[in-house]
Amino acid sequence: MRRRMTGALIALMLSAAGAAAHAAGPLTDEAKRAVVASAATALADGYVFPDLGKRAGDRIQQALAAGDYAAITDGPAFATRLTQDLQSVTHDRHMRVMDPDGPPPPGAPTGPPPTSRAGFIRVDRLQGNVGYIALAGFPAPGMFRDAADEAMRAVAGTDALIIDMRRNGGGSPESVSYLCSFFFDPARPTHLNDLIWRNKGTLTYRTQAFSTVAVPIHYLGKPVILITGPHTFSGGEEFANDLKVLKRARTVGETTGGGANPGGVQPIGSGLMLFVPGGRAENPITKTSWEGTGVTPDVPTAAGAAFATAYETALDGTPATPQRRALQARLAAGAAEPQPWIDAVLLAPRTERLPNSERILRAAIESAARGVINYEALTPDLAEPVKAQMPGVQKVLAELGPLQSLTFKQVDMMGADVYHATFAHGGMDWVIYLTADGKIAAVFYPRPPIIDPAKPS
Image 1 (cartoon, helix red, strand yellow):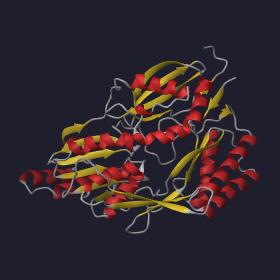
Image 2 (spheres, helix red, strand yellow):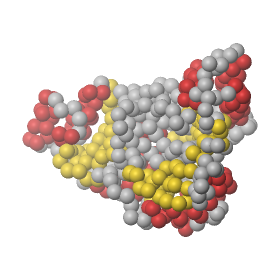
Image 3 (cartoon, helix red, strand yellow):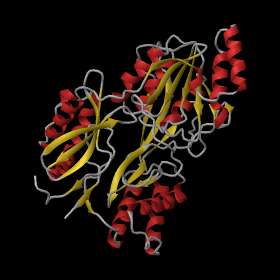
Image 4 (tube, one colour):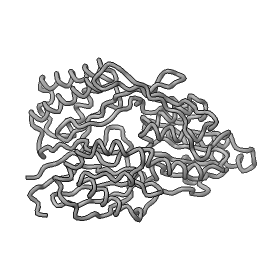
């Protein structure tokens, strides 16, 4: 008998999230009842706005009782319908039910995902001594810091900087604060943003404040231009909002996606996962957030002209020379994207696997199977979460059986190494990211494994 075990995307070392097994095949009425009940409980206990959370849970329970879900038999379709019903009540753009095997959510960027170095797709110097960074996301600090340091060192000598956020779907608020820190005076911390979290199962709240932190270099006294669009979301929006409100950057492009309520993913049965927004953002100056409205650019510009407008705006802040005037004249004539204007590639995504990633991944999996944590192998921010998650991870690996082989597949869009792991009773992909000094910043499995206890070892 084959069983599918769910696996959550894990931003830490390993995760027990979604470790409960479920049978392959059509969803039964019993399975749908269990999913709806689990989702309703999670929302009542954890959604940042308790009344709305209860109403959203009531909505899907009433829809289930009315037979609205009776004809739905597969996970992705059920996830889509539950998402629609929940968002009809909350209008929260983070709230979503997901099936790891389902299609990307509506409105996600199309085409193959770009490769990057911990989110940095491109780091270039454009003609006219303008820096250009294309940033796809804000992965966990252990992944992000080295890449951010390298990128900002590379553009330190430019006269102006463009940061293209049009494909940035967000990520870690700590990493957002880290990148912001390069643009503010290190002599005094700058308060950037607050996250107000509901204490789960209560009607009380706590505030998490984010300020600038120590970084190795700074980019001060020079223009910073951000390009935004509808796919700029969540933490990508926070970065744009932080720099816009503090008047440290000008934003050019289209209004962002409008998702400001952070949270986390939890399993709700049958392989489905629910993102529960347990907090809300609040800018310390405006006392508002971008939830539902997005961040409106300083210079509203259609997508096709956004890069050219940003480039021209950046050039306006550089020394007035004949070269600058010639560049601006050429920009006015066309060429709306970066490629024709690149003077030098300063930092390119890695395409070859890290020399030690296979050995380190094997050791991590085998140690986890024994329930052993090698703290020396981890970045400091992983220790406690890994310790909490280890029992569930050990259970997953026990069902898979001994690790037999690792086969390198590719470097993924965040610059992590992807391997296929073959176990005695199944197989799955694993992703590993290492810091410059060889520490594990992230290890996760992006898709659930297929467990086959009958498979001979």
